[in-house]
Length: 319
Image 1 (tube, rainbow, N blue to C red):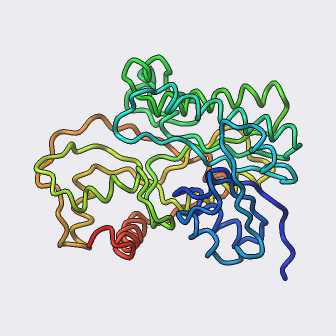
Image 2 (image 1 turned 30 degrees about the vertical axis):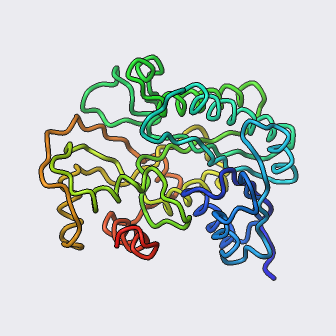
């Protein structure tokens, strides 16, 4: 058997991104502790079917708000990739309980457990949402890692997801500064690409709706898209590269909804696409230049779209 590269803990291992992170780590000969809510739940069966899972993957029951469960999952690991995060469905009735507490307190619990378990490095998944909600950023200027979403602005516009991610990421760096823990964050934009998990996640739903809802009219939004497999690679780079530090924006393609639909139509003409487009909001461009200097690269938008659609078809979501 190949020598393993050590043991890493992945929080939220059963989710969309978490599943791809586990798959990547196993393929690179890591031993993985994956935290899930209930290891025997059949919605995590796909993880146990991954290559090398039978030897190198252990699913551990843990809850972000239960410190002891996190500590026992993290103990003995050399690194942690903190992927778990609450993503809202359309309506958030109690943002404090549904979004903010699990994101912020959950992240701090993970970091405290890492400090106590003497983990070498923690990579925290933040979001482009913690970068882009910044009304004071100069118009038309590409956003880099120095841009932070304005928490007050997120609150007043009720962007609870943006608020929770911004708050959690800034608290993570604050904790790192006080404790000396090595924390690196990765901020992906909208994540598409094939699904491994049996349930549909929020970001994939955006693409699925474009294919099947047949909207009479939809906003011609500017979106920044990145492939789930490329995000997994970014997280591993941020863990493995000794020189990695601070935060990294992770994005690949900027496109308007209308152009995206045209592209999809040219490959898959028979889906129920939106019929009309209304004027979209302003373009907010984010740059992954810093991440690329670390050695990151990304696949083509076409590959992401085709692999996404094929995986939805295989899962019986579209047909």
